[in-house]
Image 1 (cartoon, helix red, strand yellow):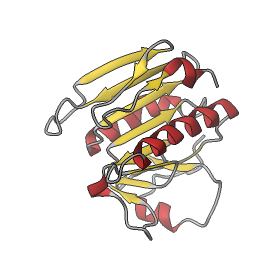
Image 2 (image 1 turned 60 degrees about the vertical axis):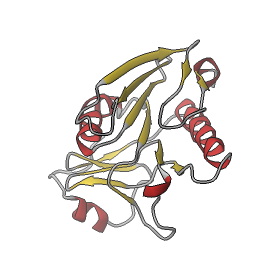
Image 3 (image 1 turned 135 degrees about the horizontal axis):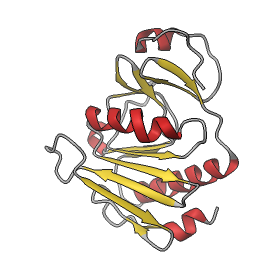
Length: 185
């Protein structure tokens, strides 16, 4: 649900007084999202799996849960789960991430799914996200969009995985997510 009547810049968005917990700036509109319980369970599971992978060895970067990610002048997203490589870790006192994370996972919410598969997917691609997971909790599937090489200007690999499949990524060697277990939440 959009709560703005005019398009805002990222600067204006950051200057807003504290408001609802789950907000994002999508193409200049403040969007409020209230995730359901299954959304939160799957988000937490993904975050825990990424956290465990990062903690298994030093230098594996940093994962996180929703935080402001400033992508451009009209887009400040709060990805459900994100990961950045070690070289791009935000400073300890950073208020937000500036620029794209390396990996983003968006888990379906009824109020924002159209944005996730449309505007947000295109913005993540344009901003340089290396890999995007769109986790569809209604279809129990994951749409994976990735770049085969960092130099590729667009997502050139697209996969659809479902329960019974194992989700892996070249960004996180050794991470294997059993989608049957993930969707059994």
